[in-house]
Length: 226
Ligand code: NI
Image (cartoon, rainbow, N blue to C red; front, side, top):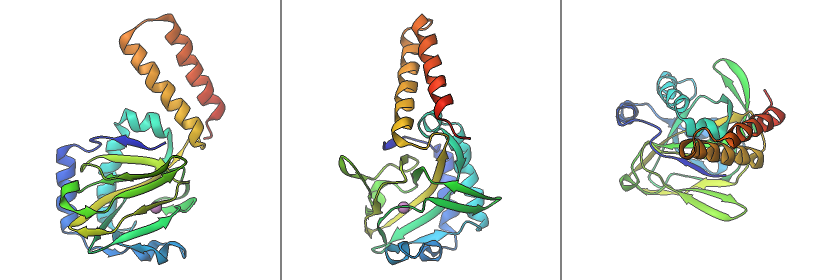
C-alpha cells in the first residue's frame, strides 16, 4: 500500500527545517550506501551522527507522533531516526530495494525495514524530475508531493529517485518497523480502522461498532509482534 499523508509538517516546522538545511554541511550519499546501492546512488545527505540530522529528525518524529493517519497505517513499533538528503545537478538514486535490517547507533538497536517513508521538503515547482518511482503489482507509481507531505510505501518494493534536472529536491527519509510485518495484513487493519472511524462519525453509538472495534483489536492481537 502506498499512502500519502498530507501536511505532516506545519508551515512553521517546514520553514525551520528548510532554513537549517540551507546552512548544512552535506556529505556524499555513497558514504552510507551498501555495496549494491553505491553504484546507483548519487546524492548528498546528512549522516546519522550529524547533530543537525538529530535535531531536525526529532521535529519529524514529533510530527509523526501526532499523526493518527501515520499511526493507523504504519502501526509503528520502531522508527529509524530520520535522515535528510538533497538531489540536484542530475542527482538520482537508481532502482533498488532498501536494506532489510538497519542498525542505528542512537541508541544501538536494529530496525527491520517494513515501511519506507519520504517526507518532501521542497515544493514540486522548485525542481524538475526527482519523482519517487515505486513499483508494485499494479505498475510503477510516480510520486512528487507538496513540501511537508509524506509518502509511506512497502520497503520491499523496487523504487528509484528520478534524476533532478533543475533546482534541488530536499527530503527526509526513514524506515519503520511495524508491529504487523506483512503489508497485506497491515492494509486490512488500516482499511478497517478508517471504516470504523467513519462509522463512528456518521452513526455514533451504533451497537455494531462495538463488535467491529473488537474484531480490529483481536486481529491486531493475533498479528502484532512486539
Ligand atoms: Ni531506497
